Length: 130
Image (cartoon, rainbow, N blue to C red; front, side, top):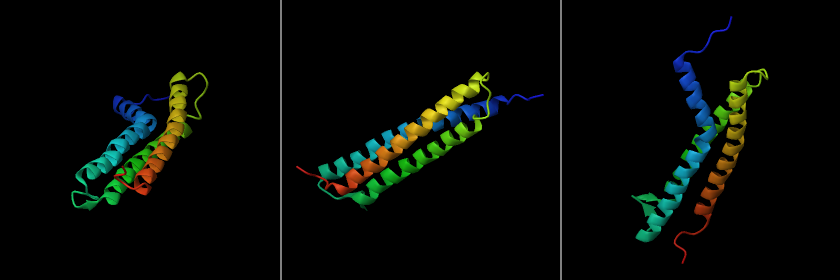
């Protein structure tokens, strides 16, 4: 006899699955607005500091925090993928969850690469060119 998960477990599982699928995209959006926005604001002010913090440190935080969020999302997607691997072919909800987990793993790897390379670009290229 199998027991069905309660509504709280289903809600948590669903939210975690969506975090595993969309977490990297949200983190990338935050990274774009924060890192490039800080760079542009400091440039417009004619300074290399943002609120008494050196620009490279502020941008570094705008890279590290979304990067960690994306790594967490990647780990959740990988965990869902592993746990749904034992599902039979007749179990459609597990099949859909497994497919979403695969999409989450690959998209999070892509977004993590974009965040890291975007941070490298902001930190390596000199600010306020032109």
